[in-house]
Structure formats: structure tokens, C-alpha cells
Length: 163
Length: 102
Image (cartoon, rainbow over all chains, first blue to last red; front, side):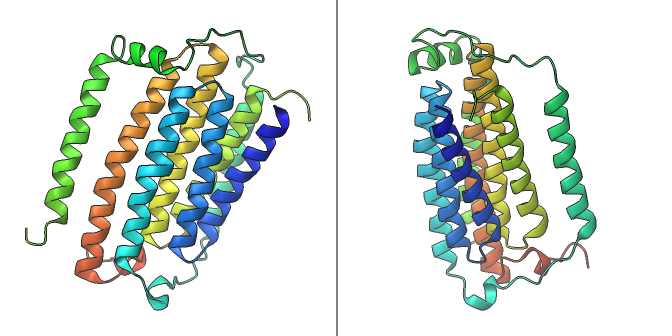
């Protein structure tokens, strides 16, 4: 279990680092797929079966296909991919400071439960999460469907040739 | 390699989140900035799933599902805007888009 965690954690961080360092967005997109699939494995290790399935289907599947499709549609040349080097040392210092601060916060946060408790077979299953989604979280669920509808209409309006 | 505790997952989540922050702040390519945001959303999802497991409640799974739906909507709208920007300005570099600053 520990070995699986370290391998998946390493792969997800590797994918993320490759994604932000590659100049070609297509290489970055494939590195992000690696990161997302590793995260899906971690979700499975945390007994989140439903979220694991969604991560593979929606994130590593649909959203990444959309991004890669857009990258290929734009068909950037080498010149268009060139980025002027940015030297923002203040921003870098801020990022490092925030990261260290968050790590310290996690470290000193003593209220965290230290051990996992026993769970039934219902935990994280499609039936369990689905029931919770349609009882306790019914109104947020309906709002999300409205949001997706608005997004669809917005995309159609945005992507039309003539506005 | 000892027992994997909640701290391991939270540290991993923080590392991934700040890789995403780095990408948004230091890359000028709109596509890469966009993908960095996706990575940040996923890091937060990992935190939700971790807390759900360690508190033995499934609420975190539902929130993670909502985050994914939000990310899907954001991906659709964001990429449509990206295509429109490229069609009108033939660039995907954030530094070249200074219409509102000039």
C-alpha cells in the first residue's frame, strides 16, 4: 500500500512538473494525463470508487480530449509557442513562501485524524454517493446541471463565427 | 516507508497545487495556464477525497463530483474563449493580449 502510494505520488508530481516546464503544449497535455491517471489511482486507494471512475472518464477522458483537440486545432508554429523568459523573483518568493506556509499549517494542525477507521462496502460506491447526491445534496446537484446547461449555451454562442 | 498517514496525502495535494500556481504565474502560454488550473482543481479534489476517507463520510466525494462538473464547464467555456482569441488575434501568449491595458 505504501509502495503504491509513493509510486503514484511520484508519477503525479512528475506529470505536473513536466506539464509546467514543457514548451510544447501538446507534450504538456500528455504529461497532465499522466498526472490525472496517477491521481485516479490514489482516489481508488482512498476507497473512492465513484470518483475514481469519474476521474478516468471525465478528466483523463473527456476534458483532456477537449484540450488536446483544441491544441491540435490551433496548430501552433514554433514561433507562436515561443515565450519570452519571465523573471519575476517576487512572485517566485511568494509562491515558495505560500508553499512553506501551507506545509507548516498541515504540520501543526493537530485536529487531523491520524488513522483510518473501518468503512462498509457502501463507502464511495456508486450507490452510496448517488444516494447522498440525490438526498442531502439535491439542490446543489440541480444547480450544477443548470450551470452545465448555461456553459453549453455559452460555448455555442462563443464559438459561433459571426456574433 | 512507514504507514501512509493523512499528512502524506495533504502534502502531495499541496505540492500539486503549487505546481499549478507556478504554471499560472510563470507560463505565458494560455493553454498551459489553463492546464495548470486543471491541476490545481485536481489537487483540491485529492484533499476532499482524503478528508472523506479519514472522517468516514462520503460528503467529500459529492463535493469532488461538483468540482469535476465545474471543471468540465470551465474547460468548455475557457477553450471556446481561447479559440476565439486565437482566431481574432493569432496569438495564445498572455503577454500579447494587452488590449485592456493600453
